[in-house]
Structures are given as structure tokens and as C-alpha cells.
Image 1 (cartoon, one colour):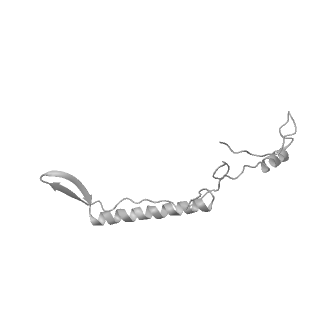
Image 2 (cartoon, helix red, strand yellow):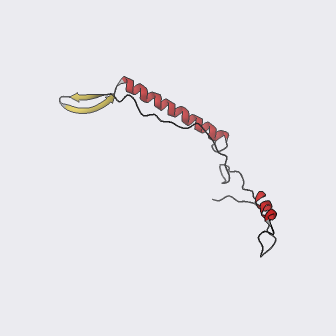
Image 3 (cartoon, one colour):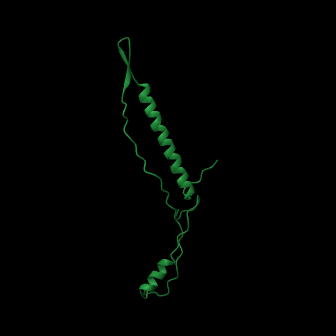
Length: 111
């Protein structure tokens, strides 16, 4: 699907623009429609603060061994709390991104 554009009519078969002013006038009146959910077109930019992901500082884990067999590892409470905090930070940034996109007209959220 492509967007339809409108522009001033060209009047000469051999000469595209008579002069610089004519070229500037042509492109000044060159219009691409705004995008909608159903139609392509131009959209506004949405901006948010940069997503800075910090590396985990707490890398402790507990090794689970039963009857001499290694069953795997699980994070300590401190590591789990750090992971949960980073997950919440990512959730808030996603909500912020979606709000910015909705405000700029790039996203329609159905409720």
C-alpha cells in the first residue's frame, strides 16, 4: 500500500521548471497526507529519554545439588531484587515510549 501525494500540475512537456523560484514553489506545495491506521503517509516523531541498561552488579547464585547431581542454579534474593528492579525500569520505559507514540499519533491503543 502506498500513500498518494499531491503536487502542482506541471505545465510544459519539455521544461520541468522555468527557474529556481518555480522549483521551490513546486516543492513547497508538494503534500504527503498524514498517516492513519488504514492509510500510509507521514507520521510525527516520538521522542523519549534514552534507554540505558546497566549490567547486573550482583551475579551471585545458589547451586542446587541433590544426591550428587547438579540440578542447576537460582539467583540469590539480592540478585532477584536487582533483576526485578531492572524489569520494572524497562516496563516504565515501555509505557513512556507507548505514551509518546500515542501522543504523536503513531500508535492507537485500543481499550
